[in-house]
Length: 204
Image (cartoon, rainbow, N blue to C red; front, top):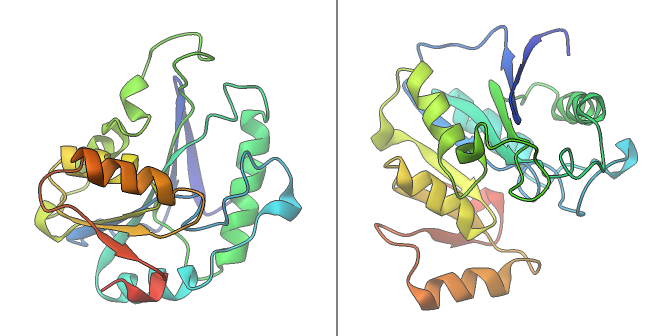
């Protein structure tokens, strides 16, 4: 991960590209599991890291359109003791290798869990908390009205809407289909809501 700078925070981490173009005026926020790599539960093995079809094309297309790419991911496997922070970095490095030229500008990770974490530091980073989004928006001078969030769970949309992002997509998956339906029925996702898509090629 030589082209990135790793910063450790309490219950969180920040990985930033050395070549990030801060002059860009908008952000594409991406969840990791289910959007960038296939969601197979708590990933602990390199061989389980596999890209979601179309993610490389999507990142390149929106980078070309002038967007910064920021990953916002809950990684409860760290406080649960399933993987170490070093293992998380190893898995992230492999993901970046698979992405090739379509790498993100920043990767924000929440290691907080309400049961397993020893402190509440940076607890707001855990989605549906909006801490990761606020961190990126505080240091990057972008137009919030041009930002986009793509996730696969309602918590992704709730976190994005809390900071004023109104263009939100949920990728339809069998794993979270019932959860999405429940949120819709309970009307917990307000504002402009979200667009449910079957493929990352449907974004735009």
